[in-house]
Image (cartoon, rainbow, N blue to C red; front, side):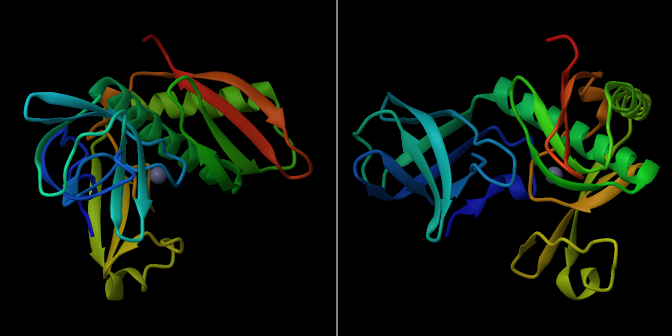
Length: 233
Ligand SMILES: [Zn+2]
């Protein structure tokens, strides 16, 4: 298995690792990684692996049964090689801002009218959140966004908690589990809410700035979608 450095530290962006195996020349299994794999609504990281002065661009990251596999742009890496690894940090940090903003927005929507979040997909350009709501128009979506911005502006600390499974199973509000071994990973935005999540997050909402409504979509009965993005850059 690959040690997942992002599980405890969302800010790990450079690390050294060892190539455990190579498949088809370009699919590299590492002993440890800070590259987040595609899944759970968060896109994979990109970046590069460096070995013997040669750079290999990481173009895809997948979690497989044997560990985390990094797809690189060309062949040449060998099993047993020591590699220096670095993430494309501007992309990753933007996804962290999007992810924490999504949690804040969803907490507010859930608190206001009990809507369930049925899915979300983070993006670099925009992020979408799917809700079990009977009706949603632009005005209501804008109200949610405005309220989220009020919370984000409070510079709230964001904490990653690793709770032992036996303890977590007694907490009814943590129904959806994201366990690794015997731990439940919970992301807590101070004063707003906490939820199980395996993704990467900023340490404080001050890193996010404001969010902006991009649009709403009616996906059918009881299925509504909000798109938002980060204000400014
Ligand atoms: Zn999440």
